Each structure stands twice: as C-alpha cells, then as structure tokens.
Amino acid sequence: MFQVDAKTKGLNVYRVGGAVRDALLGWPVVDNDWVVVGATPEVMQQRGFKPVGRDFPVFLHPDTAEEYALARTERKSGHGYGGFEVHASPDVTLEEDLSRRDLTINAIAQRFDGALTDPFNGQRDIEQRLLRHVSPAFSEDPLRVLRTARFLARYAHLGFAIAPETLELMRDVSRSGELSHLAAERVWVETEKALGEPNPDRYFTALNDSEALAAWWPELTDDVVLANALEAMALETVAQLAIDSSLPLAHWRYALLVSVLNDAQRDALAIRLRLPNAVTQLARHVALSRDILAEPLSDERVLHWLERLDGWRKPAQVKAQLQLIKRLAENTLEPLDRAWQAAQSVDPQALLQAGYRGAALGKALREHRQQAVASALMDAH
Image (cartoon, rainbow, N blue to C red):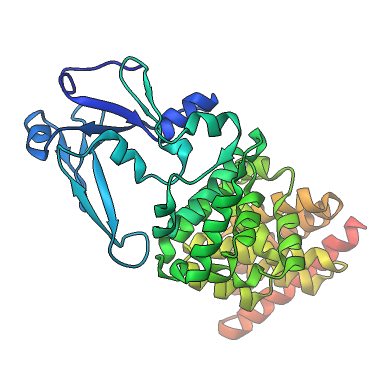
C-alpha cells in the first residue's frame, strides 16, 4: 500500500516493476517506479510534474523526485536496446504497459490500496523461483539478455533459475547478432551492477549458457579460462577488501576476474567495454600483484612492482594492493610491506644535496631504493 498525495490524487497511479517484485520477495526496496494510466503530458505538467523523458513521457514528482511514466507501448523499429517506437496516450491500458516488460516478476503492478495486477503470473514465478520472459517480444531488446543474467546474479541465492524457454530465447538473441548493437557503456552498466550482486559468477555462467559471452567477452569463452576467472573472482574476503581499500566491490571483482588473462586480453576487454580508467587501472594492478606472488620475491621484482603501481606518487595504490595480498597470501604481506616502507624512506632531497641531477638522479634514486628493498627482504627472512 502507498499514500496518495495532493499531486497524484485523482490520477490512476500504480507502483510497478522492481519495487513490487522486491517487496514480494522481502528484498529491500530502494527505488519506486510509477505508471500513470489515462493521463496526458499536459495533465502531468499542470500538476507540477517535471518532464525528463527524452524518448517517452516520464515526469519527476515535484516533491519526491520519483519517476512517473505515462503508460506506453513499444514497437521494434531498429537495432539495439534503443531501436523502438514508443506510443504513449491515455488509451494505453495498464496490461498493455506491463506486456512490454522483460520478465514476469517485473510485470506486476500495485494499486494504492495494495491490490495487485498480475496478468502474466509473476507472483507464481516468484513462488516457483523462475526468471521467465513476459512474451516473445523479449527477444526484441538484446539488453534483456544481460538484465536476465544480472537478475540471476541477484536472486540465485534465493533459489531462482532462468526458465528453459527464456534461456532458449536468450540464445536466439545471441545468435542473431543483436548483442553487438548494444552500446559498450550499457553493457558495462549491466555488468558493473551484476558484479555488485550476491552471486556475480551466475551472471557470467548465464551469459555463457546463453551463448552471449562471445559478443563482448570472447576472452572468457574458453571453459577452462572462465572457470579460472570465476574462481579468482570468488575471493571470500573481497567485500571486506572493498571496505578497507575504499574501492568499489564491483571493481575489485572485475579486476580479479580478468587477472587470469594476459595483458593484451585485459586491454582488449577494457577498450571494447570502454571501461572507466579507474577500473582498467585496478585490473592492471591486481594482475601485477598476482604476478608478484607467482615467484619468490626479489629486490628487482618488488621494485618493479612498486614502480608499476606508481607508488612514489600514488602510495594509496600500493596500500590497496597490500590489502589484496593480505587476503591472497598473508605470509607475503610482511616482507612486501617492509620493502615498501624501506623504499619510501629513500629521500630524493638527500641525493639532490649530494649533487645528483637529471638522469643521474633518477638512476641513483632507483639504486638506493633497490638497496633498501633488498635489505628489507633480507631482514624479513
């Protein structure tokens, strides 16, 4: 149930989508989405709602800033998730609006008195723990393949699975080539959300099962590589690592996932997905840290690690990787931390005062740091 306020009184308003789904699941409701049936843009603006929709009529409530969309239908008119013609008018019914949604669990509407409209048996699928498409129109929007995989990452721990007929539709979309028409930014948005869910591995296994990995993640299509990547991502203490390092959980998980790839593969993925620089950089740093743990420590290898992390200018990047190493190989943490502290103690000013300049200064600085690292590693044994 929800309250009708002065701005919505007299409107045929329904709470829809994720808020209804999550309330039925006992999952925290973060955002409300609303559909208004039988209204026009003029009516909404007269009530003080602010129009914000570029492609279809969506309005912000003047007091709560929540989104209110006019009921609409959609018709496929082009490639990708944006290739639709939208029809919004007072004669569009609630059932017609719900019919354009992706999954039955997202196609339930709630009236202000709590009464539910559920024309596609979403409540039944919630009870049966199934992610099932509303209609064959599911295949018109390739983004729904990623969204369905993301919902599996969110709800798998509650026992949810993708309905076999929906998985087959996802395969049809993959085989059609429509996934390649998605914008890289949209693919990353869905992936980043999935990486923050309770079971992010299920996102990638669902995409693999639906033959969707090849479009955007060809580096992960080999079964052995994918298994190794998911194992690397499944670091049990990664949530605490995110807290301790003040870096997003999703970014750590991505970096761990791709740490099993080589540099060229990681860079190709970063370019294809148009990753934010911070994510690309963290992925490189995690790969460096896994490499440093692969062989016995030496002063040259440790110094190279610190240099690649840009430790002198950005010490926080070294500290973040030390937090990771604490969780990957705790016995290596102390010698690396000692080496880092020792290298930091080398004072460039002292070398300047000793007369070093230019390239000679850089060379001397590196030699002194390497000596400091070597001494620290000896002391740690």
